[in-house]
Length: 97
Image 1 (tube, rainbow, N blue to C red):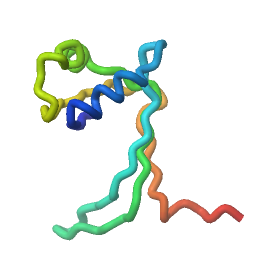
Image 2: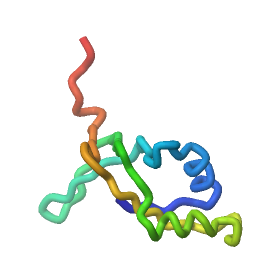
Image 3: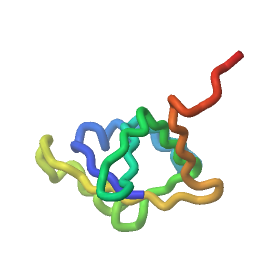
Image 4: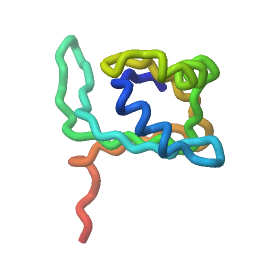
């Protein structure tokens, strides 16, 4: 998985880095599908990464953060192990009854 973030946000991620060497991350986003050249809005989506670790190149970027300006955008590449990435389309989940 790849994403970019501002240096400040990356520093916050690093502070919360697991002592076991992996992250369990959850993101919120807007889900879209493309069908017959049309974008279909699938609504809010929750993306969960379990057991994500920074790639070697990303770890090197993290070690050099102090040298970068505060408004720098940092590219992050995470390697995701089993169980991988789960996607939940929030409005498509069954209601809790």
